[in-house]
Length: 227
Length: 227
Image (cartoon, rainbow over all chains, first blue to last red; front, side, top):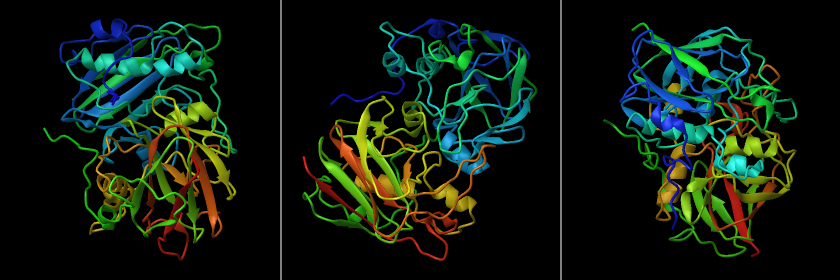
């Protein structure tokens, strides 16, 4: 029997080599850049704030939060929908875990608030289905690698909170992949309610227009402050 | 470090004792009843059809599908949304896995087609948040127990396909828990595209109206045919 290991990348990129530190602890206030098409993990202690910014304005961030003391507890979009009574989180909303604890709270969103909580991260199988013959960087592998790069391992690929990703859900249930409506420099801040490991992937999707039309996948930036 | 074990029930009910057989294999064509508030698992071989029916018309079924040869591959609503371009699956649609394979295909739906794919299964934490002081039967534990009852263990609690569950998603993203619009005797059929273990929970939710107004959680029925 083949047993699927959610922590094992299907392929690799620079995400394995660009950790911010050996265990993911940040220098307070330092601005870090996530290379285009890559993922990074950062530890955020209870009370600290993680700010993620979007220099180009068109770059989607696949975002996951794990509880530091138990990686088996993580942000869960299906639990979030129940907690919020909405598929669109906004400032003041907690990001709920699969154990129904708020791991972080959204404290700032300079964009129009269009983000996605219903679509899976892109992954190796997705790009194969989209016709890619070669390995394509993907958010699931970026998550796996970002955790490996700080000595951890993904126990699952949770449904992501896709920051700035524009996937309208219409009255008939239909969805589509549309360009972001965010602007250059838009940022979102998240206050940690407990010690967490946050993982961000600068989505390498360049087959559908989720990262903009006529653009290429770009960088993201983040910093940890306070606490 | 406490490590969350997704396969371990928070509490138990009769689901542990009502397996259809030691390994979940069904008698072809036999009608099985899922006791109210309980869960059951059944093996469905490639080419066979599982038909789930709703005698009362108001009973929600939390539904999951696992690949028999690797329980780490299972139905994934976030991947389904990408595959279908919709949050509302309909006849002819495949139910996609976290590895983006269709595990089963919907071949019949006698209801108006209102089902939910964005809300987590009810679980112990949910009922605590709803004010229940004592243990309350819940779909996550029913999944865990139904698998234990046939000698297996849940490697995760995947986001469920909630048959007949009526959770409108409005243009502003807001959701609500509404009574089902299905009728007594409505049924859905699923053809297995590979050998699977299907798990069904007769949702014990009686705090919100998802299982009807002025009703109590009721039974479900199923049978496996063909192949």
